Figure (tube, rainbow, N blue to C red):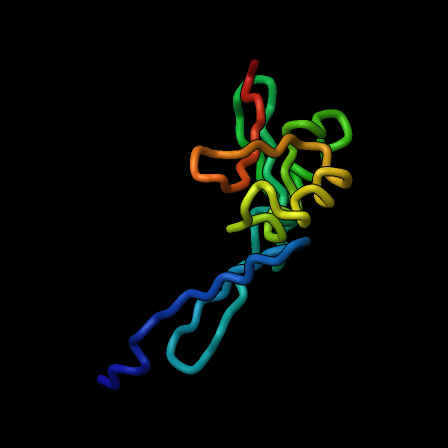
Length: 114
Protein backbone atom coordinates (compact mmCIF):
# COMPACT_ATOMS: atom_id res chain seq x y z
CA UNK A 1 0.00 0.00 0.00
CA UNK A 2 1.27 3.46 -0.89
CA UNK A 3 1.83 5.26 2.42
CA UNK A 4 1.21 8.68 0.83
CA UNK A 5 -2.16 7.57 -0.54
CA UNK A 6 -3.37 6.54 2.94
CA UNK A 7 -2.37 9.78 4.70
CA UNK A 8 -5.02 12.32 5.60
CA UNK A 9 -4.47 15.95 6.48
CA UNK A 10 -6.84 18.70 7.50
CA UNK A 11 -6.56 22.37 6.64
CA UNK A 12 -8.44 25.21 8.32
CA UNK A 13 -8.81 28.67 6.82
CA UNK A 14 -9.78 31.00 9.66
CA UNK A 15 -10.87 34.08 7.79
CA UNK A 16 -11.94 37.42 9.17
CA UNK A 17 -15.36 37.10 7.54
CA UNK A 18 -15.69 33.40 6.66
CA UNK A 19 -13.88 30.19 7.51
CA UNK A 20 -13.65 26.78 5.87
CA UNK A 21 -12.19 23.34 6.47
CA UNK A 22 -10.72 20.93 3.93
CA UNK A 23 -9.38 17.41 4.18
CA UNK A 24 -6.57 16.12 2.00
CA UNK A 25 -6.79 12.42 1.23
CA UNK A 26 -3.89 11.25 -0.88
CA UNK A 27 -3.58 13.76 -3.72
CA UNK A 28 -7.11 15.17 -3.46
CA UNK A 29 -8.39 18.02 -1.30
CA UNK A 30 -12.07 18.23 -0.41
CA UNK A 31 -13.67 21.25 1.24
CA UNK A 32 -16.09 20.08 3.92
CA UNK A 33 -19.61 21.50 3.80
CA UNK A 34 -21.18 22.77 7.03
CA UNK A 35 -24.57 21.69 8.42
CA UNK A 36 -26.32 24.03 5.99
CA UNK A 37 -24.49 22.63 2.97
CA UNK A 38 -22.22 25.64 2.44
CA UNK A 39 -18.47 25.25 1.93
CA UNK A 40 -17.78 28.42 3.92
CA UNK A 41 -19.06 29.36 7.37
CA UNK A 42 -19.32 32.89 8.74
CA UNK A 43 -16.56 33.47 11.32
CA UNK A 44 -19.17 34.42 13.91
CA UNK A 45 -19.92 33.00 17.36
CA UNK A 46 -22.80 34.03 19.62
CA UNK A 47 -24.02 33.18 23.10
CA UNK A 48 -27.76 33.19 23.78
CA UNK A 49 -29.66 34.17 26.93
CA UNK A 50 -30.05 30.44 27.65
CA UNK A 51 -26.27 29.96 27.53
CA UNK A 52 -26.22 28.21 24.15
CA UNK A 53 -23.31 28.79 21.78
CA UNK A 54 -24.22 29.43 18.15
CA UNK A 55 -21.70 29.31 15.29
CA UNK A 56 -21.76 30.49 11.68
CA UNK A 57 -25.05 31.38 10.00
CA UNK A 58 -27.09 30.79 13.17
CA UNK A 59 -24.90 33.24 15.07
CA UNK A 60 -24.92 35.76 12.24
CA UNK A 61 -28.73 35.67 11.91
CA UNK A 62 -29.35 36.68 15.52
CA UNK A 63 -26.61 39.35 15.67
CA UNK A 64 -29.07 42.25 15.35
CA UNK A 65 -31.01 41.23 18.45
CA UNK A 66 -28.00 40.01 20.48
CA UNK A 67 -25.11 42.18 19.30
CA UNK A 68 -23.28 42.38 22.64
CA UNK A 69 -22.95 38.59 22.75
CA UNK A 70 -22.12 38.06 19.07
CA UNK A 71 -18.43 37.98 18.19
CA UNK A 72 -17.15 38.46 14.64
CA UNK A 73 -14.01 39.81 12.95
CA UNK A 74 -12.05 38.44 15.91
CA UNK A 75 -9.10 37.41 13.75
CA UNK A 76 -7.92 41.02 13.65
CA UNK A 77 -7.72 41.09 17.45
CA UNK A 78 -6.11 37.72 18.18
CA UNK A 79 -2.73 37.88 19.88
CA UNK A 80 -2.80 41.64 20.41
CA UNK A 81 -2.12 43.64 23.54
CA UNK A 82 -5.12 45.51 24.94
CA UNK A 83 -3.39 48.89 24.86
CA UNK A 84 -2.50 48.74 21.13
CA UNK A 85 -4.01 51.44 18.93
CA UNK A 86 -5.57 48.73 16.72
CA UNK A 87 -7.68 47.65 19.69
CA UNK A 88 -8.86 51.20 20.35
CA UNK A 89 -9.87 51.50 16.70
CA UNK A 90 -11.63 48.12 16.74
CA UNK A 91 -13.65 49.08 19.84
CA UNK A 92 -15.25 51.88 17.81
CA UNK A 93 -16.55 49.39 15.22
CA UNK A 94 -17.66 46.35 17.19
CA UNK A 95 -20.68 45.71 19.39
CA UNK A 96 -19.12 43.24 21.83
CA UNK A 97 -16.97 44.20 24.80
CA UNK A 98 -13.17 43.93 24.89
CA UNK A 99 -11.33 43.76 28.20
CA UNK A 100 -7.72 43.34 29.29
CA UNK A 101 -6.55 40.05 30.77
CA UNK A 102 -3.98 39.69 33.56
CA UNK A 103 -1.11 39.65 31.04
CA UNK A 104 -2.21 42.73 29.12
CA UNK A 105 -3.76 40.87 26.20
CA UNK A 106 -7.12 41.60 24.68
CA UNK A 107 -10.01 39.38 25.74
CA UNK A 108 -13.68 39.28 24.70
CA UNK A 109 -16.34 39.53 27.40
CA UNK A 110 -19.79 38.11 26.72
CA UNK A 111 -22.64 37.30 29.07
CA UNK A 112 -23.97 33.77 28.76
CA UNK A 113 -27.47 33.60 30.12
CA UNK A 114 -26.99 36.45 32.58
